[in-house]
Length: 299
Image (cartoon, rainbow, N blue to C red; front, top):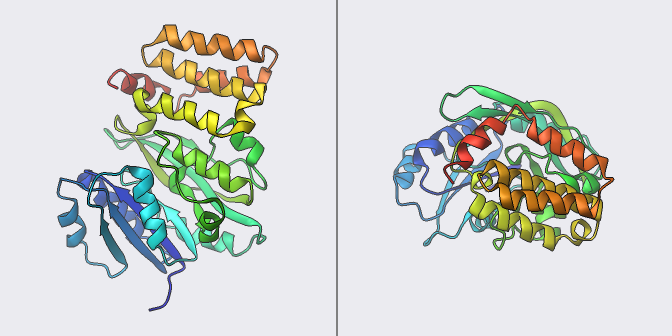
């Protein structure tokens, strides 16, 4: 059997009603030389039946015996992948039809030092289906310094050389959040990033993403900071992270703890104007802040 150009990996857990949309968006790609690996993280809903009903020889279904979390499910798919490139899609997100076509073409045009091609994406309300914002790519080349400060890469938009994972390892299951950011940062130490300047995916906003669960997000973000010493030891970069955590805590209904983070952020780098600019951008982000405020009330 010939190896596909791309291995697409969808980890899933108890989201059969959303999974169909994600799978269909992959099968509707204009670029067809791929395998689709669905890793079922021990779902107890109709996920097995949903996948079985979709008849396409490119689909490979793997079921884990016990619920192990997103990083383990992704790692399982990566280990079983046969493609030259890896593309990741969460079960609640969706690709636009030319996503793979555009990015495979770009990957074949760029220098061999490029390990990742990413693109832009829409923020979409899960409740209404309406587009509430967009994010376009803005950095290329060696982006490690930029990634230390912010995760500007949307996980449903990356096309990654499989060799990147052999170089830096797999997703870290010890992180309760920020696993994607951790991976992109590790890859960016060794490889360049490039992008297609187009929207290639839809990121659905609802109340069940780990990003919006403070009880998991904050400890995960703190562990992420400690893990990457280039953040922890750089007062200007650390101040950006602390102020963002502070704002999220305030929005989530814990102003006392949030203000402590903001005060510490200012104390360690009082003249870091970039920190204040990024904090203001986040606070005024019309794409998602209203959704964050609403969702955090229920976490």
